[in-house]
Length: 75
Picture 1 (spheres, rainbow, N blue to C red):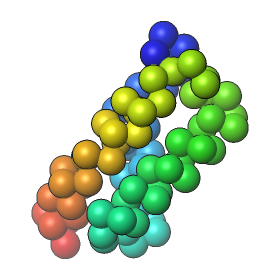
Picture 2: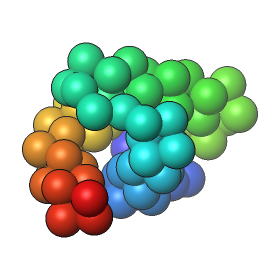
Picture 3: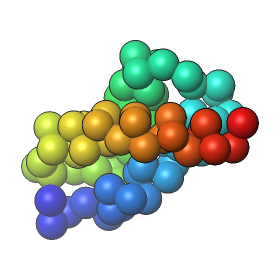
């Protein structure tokens, strides 16, 4: 993960922002959005192929509960 130009926190915050604007409310939508954001970053070369891709995906996907708690507080 030495080549990761964005931290997991940066990525999480970006996914959260997009999830709020897109109205993501389910775990499945969250996972789809994580995949979408990471593919965009990969194509922009902000995440390189030799980064621990599975770790990044799992780290973000497992944060759905945290995101859903934040949404509950906001609503």
